[in-house]
Length: 149
Image (cartoon, rainbow, N blue to C red; front, side):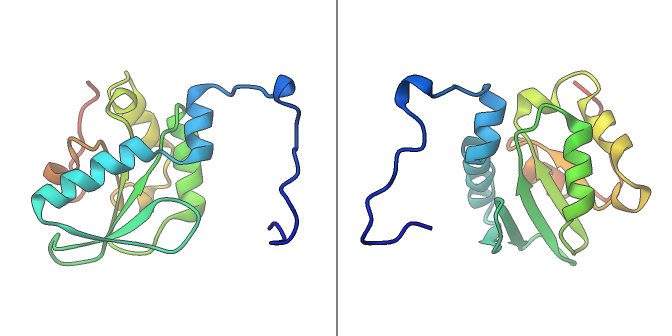
């Protein structure tokens, strides 16, 4: 928090700034493009989304049938670490759609590694998807898995 009457202080001289790898920069800045694409797909399908309070992009979905559905958006290269993070911070409800960029979800083994790293009780609640597949995945019964591309 910055006091209103004090000017911001320079943390590091510009010559000393370091550029982080794109996935880390994206994670620190939140996965805006992926979130925007997912929310646009929901809007086109007429599915209402309400932002949830908290530090990460999470939304409650309405109009997806019975039960409570959520949406969380990430850009993580390592699917097992994503699963571990979600294990510790899973939203309550019937299903949470975990949206990642299509390029990640299409990598060999990404979906399987994500699912394998989840504890058994969360495997049917957390659905890994992409912005393009989100709306079709909303209509799939729980437990139906996609094959790796």
